[in-house]
Image (cartoon, rainbow, N blue to C red; front, side, top):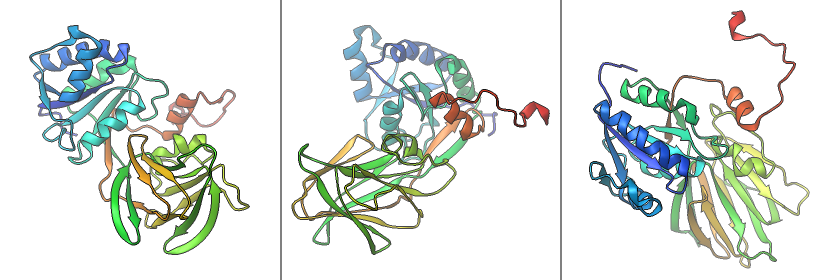
Length: 309
């Protein structure tokens, strides 16, 4: 990417509940401002920061409404927080296609590009426009009753259809490309992207899918059925879930946007035309990220190293 023109505007998204994120906020704003970069916050994020720490008031920072257009006009969205904060920032960035630059100030931070010690490198990359953009597929989700669409949403990680009451399972008929596949009495079912394969779907026993693989995952939750294994489906497919008339459930998208589901609902999931873009400091193997985030044991590896040529 060209370094001849400095970034003019950055949308900063901060987890106000994290002391580490609030501490990093000041240094990031100062470094970017000194480089002539305009920093903006969403109005709700600024309110949250002030509520957590009244000393964080800054009359110099512009604010924008916390909606789908929050990142319009920004070159990049910088996220200070964990994966939940990145998912919130994705709601602001997806519409404009603005890339997300995540700094992990949470726990696992699988969606983040950098760790706290890399913060200066992130600022330098933003100032000099040195980053690599990476696209991640998203899901288009529609809820229908009697053939009429009553709601719609999207997801970067996954949608989770789960029983509303603890003591009562739900009955779900799974359909792929217009053909019935199986019926599950279960606690719920997930439909995930490769990005979400290391999130809820992973905890539920689903496979890890490399981000460059285009696919949708279907993962049942505690299903009482002989055929109830995780499925990997073509991104060109349409996956549908039909609830029987007695099932009461709730659907959540990325754990953030919820839809109440009644008996007889049909939920259709397909690849969304609008991806989410991430900014990376440099191209890096997903295998290395997997090993680092999950602290996987690799001692004794005798494979070919990069320095060996």
